[in-house]
Image (tube, rainbow, N blue to C red):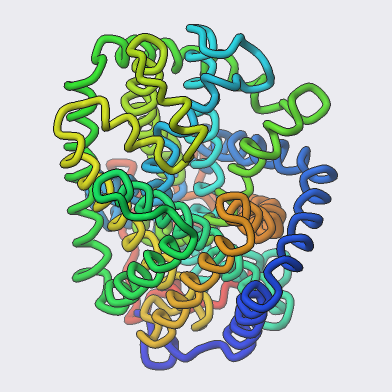
Length: 544
């Protein structure tokens, strides 16, 4: 079992270096707003121009790697002992996964992205505001929200789960690099990895906070005429930050879990309302057709770079998404890893890739499909409203249905709770990363990272609004995207050294020397656990 009293102490190097750099960023943004906007803009332009192809190729590689593991002999390896059963029931596991990595993004982009592509088709592949443009809009929306992003999460989650639950290392990103770095994971090389993971988590989360604040401000303007200003968005950030800090320090059982469960119910009810009150037949048709388009064009889309596509679209959408998902990798990956103990690599891969992707297909088909239908055939001019205010996309669509004020208020509450539940979980993860991987970071530590996340979101809004948020996400996520390449190599290196359980040996094959014989039924013989299982998290270290 984890030694909570000692494990909850902070790691001075990781904690203080991360704290100083984040505080310096916040101070820079407050005191020299124009300067930070110019510098980050120049760095962003350089990264996108020279390294865009790296993010395109690496993201596809993560998807291929996960599929390879699922279908290979390594697919039967468990994330834990060979005889260990899953910690959570499959239904609960899927339900918890649904709340990870989505939330505010689905609320903000559910209408905004498809309706934007309708008027400006990706890579100029169709004429604007046509049936072809509608199908292309859904196809590329699925591309950005289905298999590729969840492959990014899966790589981080699988690596952390494997080394934590099967090898007994601390619950840290740096622990996954022990096969490469050896004992240096406990010194500066490893600590640098954990610091970069904190940066990616904080700035990736602050982007979602900013998007949520903008959308909540838009909803309040729609219902009660509250002015849409940067000042009002920052006030919303301050209020909601206080709420999610309280939620985070209250613990998973009373805070995060309660919020996630309540939000799932409201999200499903809102989705069913739009599905039944909207163009149901059109939604069903575009759902089926666009999935077919997506699967048929998956490989060509995956290899599109500035050489054969629209550089502006790639940098503003595809590469932004790939790096944003990477910035969420430490947070979502750690969460998924925590709930996946006892599952095989094969069921883990299929569960993480397929289930959330299906949710994204349905969500965007309902909200995006309804908005497209209303714009093309209902005379609603949603595209014009979105061009004027991106964050108003959802409310402009709900306005076309009965009970618009009620559903818009529900949407605001949904965004707020997604805001809180996502941000408080991210704060807990940053507390873990700065406290030697403990599952129980100190409340003050969690609260501090929550406050800094809110502050970073406010600064990003000050120096660039939505573009500022996207810039921060890319600059923070880019280094972690490269770290993920190392994680893939480290995991594969460890898997190749794995002695597979006897149940995985081909029938008739002799057991490997030193391996326990299987029972008459063919299942591995039960292993007697000692008082402290050497594979309990943090009980290692794993030596590779």
